[in-house]
Length: 265
Image (tube, rainbow, N blue to C red; front, side):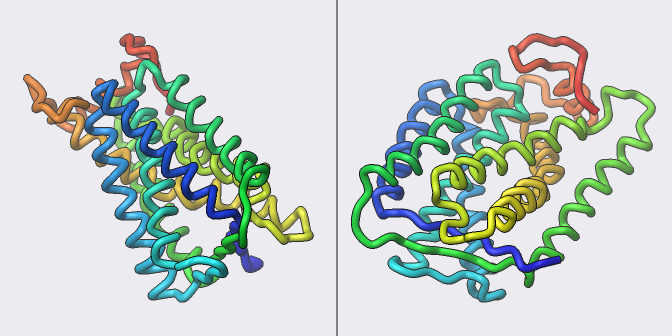
């Protein structure tokens, strides 16, 4: 497989605009009492930073930067996409009744922020990139183990409601990553400086299929474990349920908040 380079180029204004968006998004989630969603976003922002700085940079030496401090830029990037991605994923998994509004808000920002920055930004741009050949095999291993375990579980279940909704979590994992990859690409930030359009598309497609998607079986399990015992407002459920029962319960829920008895497998 050819070397895939994930590269971004942007003015410092991009960081400040995105920080303002994160503050607004967090306030909106707290206003709607999405406490568990906020907590998950914060936790996975820290996880993203540990992976990006600790593993990609310190272990694999895959990160490089021009025009900025690697530590602080990676801290912002990790908290930005770690928080936004996993808060959005949690809203998808919980089938929030305002999922359309949350999704549109996030996707519009990912599209508009790069364009605002390219028009109003100034100064020396920050260029940050990472190579992927040293760790994509590890990512592929994590992906096949997670989805393989979910597939084996489904094959062992006669009751359809007890099965992991594979198409649902697969769609979430691919679309969340594709959303911000596409926004960065269209805004001229992702793969800036690449002359070959095929290289840009290769980065978009590979990252969308692999990077966030590899964690979906695991985040789904975390969601089932916590939502079986706690509510979105971080209160203990009046009657906790077993994990298998929580899978069935979640499969019976629709995005609009009704119990419809339909789900994706």
